[in-house]
Image 1 (tube, one colour):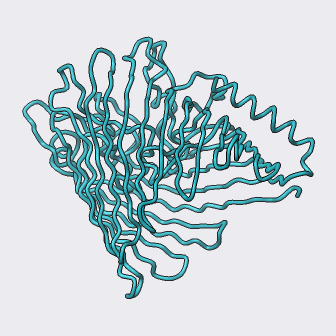
Image 2 (tube, helix red, strand yellow):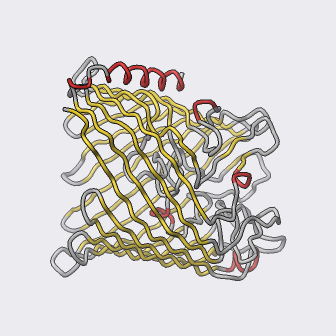
Image 3 (cartoon, rainbow, N blue to C red):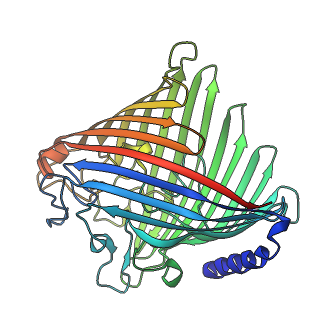
Length: 448
């Protein structure tokens, strides 16, 4: 079914192209260039000696990277009701000490597939048909390859900060909107990320059902209930996952200067012969000083994801995200944390120094929820006799300059001070990361 949706979108787009003068046809996309330095860690290991959780050396701890991602293709709006999208994307990295083989899942089994975070060569980004007012006002459908994201992208989000895009769906999605409220439902399958294989010729990694809704409760706030079912499609050797997620997000952007953002997510179901019972939450409260220079917004927050105090029993208590982003905007700009077996106490300061310039300063205090469980990002564990939970403290600086609607520049620096879990079980060093990024978005009308 998912591949059929893409073929329908492609065939229909080709047919629509014959009458392109009747609508708006454009060539559009984005180019992103990024220089990145890593000191004391990489995507597979923490520490100056680059030793992973299995005791193997993986890459180097001081890479200097140049990353490039290009998205380009066509958008055709036949009329106010029907539009088509067809874009390719290419993601490459130079100076990387890791290889594609380092990102193979279930290696040397029938369930083997690749999830490369930085490289995908000439891959399909989107190919879909979008139909508005389908059968009734406010009802729309989107069929084919697409991104699916909502809210802060924590529960459902593509994961766009990485060079290759985290979640791309081949899906049928339906939406009903009325007076600023909406409810979306979809079924689809997610693609793998293998730079040397075209996704339409490969199996999908997961299938899922999603439900996300948005109801305004104040002028600047809303509640967003959600539900998801997640099932891995590679389970001939590995355990089959049949997991359900449910919960809601509530946010208020401005209530007399106060702002808040709260999410709760429960997780249940089965993985193999084990049952799942886990949960996670996010709670943030802030206040923006509108009448003083730089309009500072100070936000206190706590991010929590349950861990498993007894990994050997028949119940899995480690929370895992549904289909959400793991981008550093959520869990620190070092990008070494997942929303899993985690306690993140954080303090954020947002500033607007001058027009078009946005600054964020952040402090994170990271702990494991359960010392018997792993540091989820790297899978390191406490050594026998150890019971440490303090992962470390992180200090982030993020600056963004929006030169124009189409051109933006970004500078990010992150410093991680290792805690006792890291220094006593992994390696006794701190880590740094620096990003310099430029993004250019373009759109060239070809008719209309």
